[in-house]
Image (cartoon, rainbow, N blue to C red):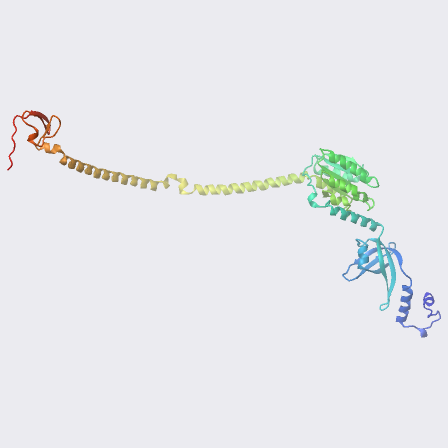
Length: 416
């Protein structure tokens, strides 16, 4: 009936003889549908297929039924919507379209707005990008947790399962662990302020080496305070290492990104903040066993080396190596003695020969042959009889002494 009123060409009394071509029918439907204009709809993204082409495809599903539809949009519309993912709840402005060649009904989307939880997630994503740009998520600024903290600060709800999980499991692992607990409201409008106040108290306590913020699981709205910008910045500014143990594994509030360590659950936090005493004892025993084995092996190597050294002839009889040298020294000494004796004998013969030569040339030898040396009392040697006239005192030096004489008569030898 609606088709008849729209086209003005069809009637309720139409018979099979008046059948229209399918293409004509699809064309009439297309004309009617596209005169409907656009409409805002609320749906959930169940499939998003991004392409390099200008046209993008989405599959939307009703939030309260299984009705779904294929939606096309431009890349600009998709980009303007912000970060979208499967499961995001959206408000879309749809215009119905009919593909005449296939007879398919589809919708063209002119605008997309994130709604409900999706809108909340979009706000959180924008805050994440802002804090990340400031470097609050940088791994280099995260502080290292102490291996065995002297005191642990715990911020959690009073009498909560999270408090019990952290205290019990940490004590089972390391019985000597000491906790300083600060209770705070862990959801609602006052949550962020309470947690910030407890964090400031524990951060100022010198006995606290580590702070744990723990809460059990919950909905996105329940955990929303742990993505509060003020709380996130307070955790980043804390001088004491902070462990975030909020919700379950799938929950990721922003405080997890800025904390020095993110634990998947409060129980996991208890395992991460203190070592397991039994495990550490086992490791110590294993380390001692390995050290003992290494030392024993090293001692065996060194003992084998000493045994090898001791087995060498030079070690067994140290003097044996010197005996050949001792014989060489004795032979050298003997050669030196013989050489010195021969040299002394040669030198002695030379001296005797020199003495003989000196004696042969000495006046004493002449005197021994009967000659005498005549000198005046003044010491002047007489070389002529003219030097000693009669009455002159003359001293005659002989080989064995001297005679004092007086000249009685001078006999001049005549020339031949």
